Length: 620
Image 1: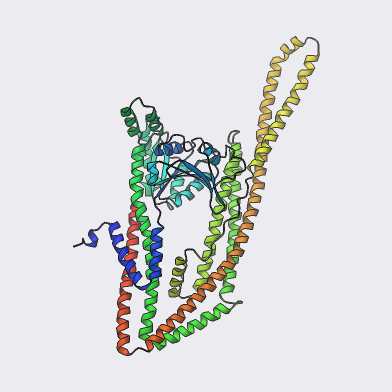
Image 2 (image 1 turned 30 degrees about the horizontal axis):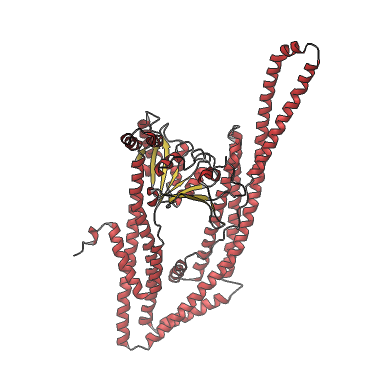
């Protein structure tokens, strides 16, 4: 005898309900059941963890320690474009630069990895910056989950924060790295408050504990700050780790010392915690996707059974209602100057205006932020800003693309709601879901626009050369005149202190003027680059909207056609029901009512299990 449902664990309850409900759907609609099974078959094989943190917190060193391969993720890649490192499993080491939806992957030599992810290193000749780089290797840990390393581009309050949040939104968990030198910064707390709404699970690692004796006091301060500023993470577990100590184990004099160092490093404990936490979670998230598909299939089946019940119980009245609805939708489909097409064009025009304002706002905010960054930059920081601008432009472009897609599908919902009843809408949504894509699918740009960073670097190199040349031209004539007069040696000795002071002051003034001029030129370049980027984005959005209007018109016409065909099928069922005698109709009605009750109960059960999965997820 099986245990009562309330005594079963949640995964077992979900698995048991899934099989029963799938059998229920299969009895009535084999195609819908096959679609649910395809959704289950597509579940992700393993979860992922995205590693983020402020610059110089030891993120990449910790990633290398977790993977057990020193130097794999470039530790000095502190200036990066919008490029992630995605570590996965393979029988041998291999890497590829990825351009999803644009170009085929490009093989990458592991020794050149830093050139692909750091803006402070030139890309290999003839290559474009990738969206991300995949690195696969024979690491047992990676057979269970994948790791995403997000190189810093100026800290969590700059572009890096946006990039990290975007990467983390689709991950199973966020591995947030802080170090033991000091408690949370305001930037880190703000980032957590922002990303907390988008990320299900956050694991905290306190790095460099071997370098700071007071790390326990810093840990207590971090926990107090979380409780005050990010209550959701109050009481969160921190994993004290030392990547350096873990690396020292490779140089230990014997196996016992190596094992002790690895244990004290905390890296192995963190690795175990990530595995234990994410593997189980991945299973439940995959089950949730299957249960959502089941809920959609059961909703569609419920609507069909309700229609069949009405046909058996009301007869001619239902037929008359269906005929009227068919005539109404046929008129809407034939209309080209009023109704749904007018509303669709109006809503698309609204979306066009909204996106124009959004592009302007995004670019204005980015320009304002980088102008402030230029003003605050020292000589070392100034040359790194083009890489950050490039990353920000990529990020804004992606965000605008997502915004266009969201607005267009909102247009779809608005127009569909005008065309169809609530019950018909449920049916249409189920059809779109089973089609595998929303009504409007935006195409990616054909190729990524080249960065303008090279133009700036050439310019700054040229101005630097001109500055040095003018300095030499200024001082050499004076020295030549001194050498031409009598008593050259005495004159040089007498003038040496003055010449040295003069050269020092001139060098300082020249360098200061050059730095100020470089900032002005950087601002001019920034303005031109953002103007060019805005023009490109506006053009891309306009092209997408023109294409999307055509897609949407076809999708809505198809929805109308399917609904009309569905009504015709329902009318045929009504005609069949009308030809039945009273006893046979009553018998058929009993069967339909029983099946309808089963489907309604199954759908309710699905929604309750989904709520339970969400509850467990949120508590974790």
